[in-house]
Length: 346
Ligand code: NAD
Ligand code: TDX
Image 1 (cartoon, rainbow, N blue to C red):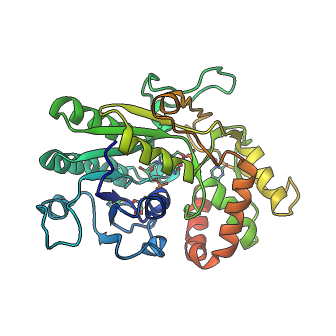
Image 2: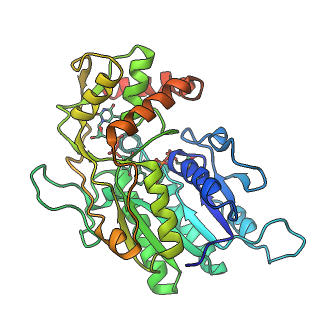
């Protein structure tokens, strides 16, 4: 096990990246964190508030900017510098929302494919450890009654412009490992929930709709199934792979959290004191995936990682409490997000 001394966390001002930076700050104060984030609509500098400035360096910039990325990596070890040079990249930065990708795929190709390429080239030049954060959506979807789940052997079969761009990024990482010997690993995780998730995503959208006096919106009949994982468990899995994962390997990350959308929505309504039918049906997503489900046997048996926050209803309660307590955080994004959805019939 090699604990990195200084990690470059791309997309660290977004939902999972910020949770990961806080997780590292809490659990590994010996590792310095440099966050590189373009602060798109999905990123906020304040998501990193509370991490000691001694442990965190924030750089506002684009992963597609090769000169900027190079300037962060080209430092030789120096006894006079406060931090050791960056020895690993943990790559979260992405355009992450399926509905946005259906409206305009171009930033998805740019950030998710080209941006990953820029980072891979930089990592190759400096012989850095590289961990790529990806999604189970690269495998397409499963039928509701399929007894199988996704494994590391499932064929790539992405459905949306978003998932196709993530599949492209995975293939680039695999090629850079095979061709150049880059010390890379990949994790493909299921749907995350928790604090700092943008109000465009399913769970925060419904919680904040209820808090803002808007009726929750269910796509279609709500029969699609997602495999939910608490973001804390995703963070511990990423660290485990970064430190102990076998180079060149892919690990699927999930917590056996399958629920239909309508069941999740009714849980939220109930926990917020509303009637279970107090929602609207809206247009389904074109080409929307029916079901995701992860078989996490490989990371569990090979690396000994196990999810800890598997009580979904308790996790939902904590998440509801967080959005209640952080109206100033989400309210500025709410009106524009709902307006964009209205235009799509969502
Ligand atoms: P997010 O949209 O909340 O955050 C993305 C972050 O990346 C933002 O801070 C944004 O400003 C930044 N960013 C975007 N383009 C950039 C660029 N060109 N240069 C630098 N920074 C840029 O996304 P998220 O939900 O936190 O997802 C993070 C990663 O995890 C993504 O790679 C996503 O594919 C993957 N993932 C997400 C989930 C999920 O359920 N949310 C599940 C599996 C995998
Ligand atoms: O208002 C809504 N109503 C609704 O019924 C929204 C926003 C979504 N939905 C449905 C669509 C999906 O079936 O809920 C499900 C979840 O939707 P999203 O939150 O948009 O997530 P999903 O498309 O499953 O993708 C998420 O998990 C995988 C992340 O956004 C991706 O970044 C990750 O790769």
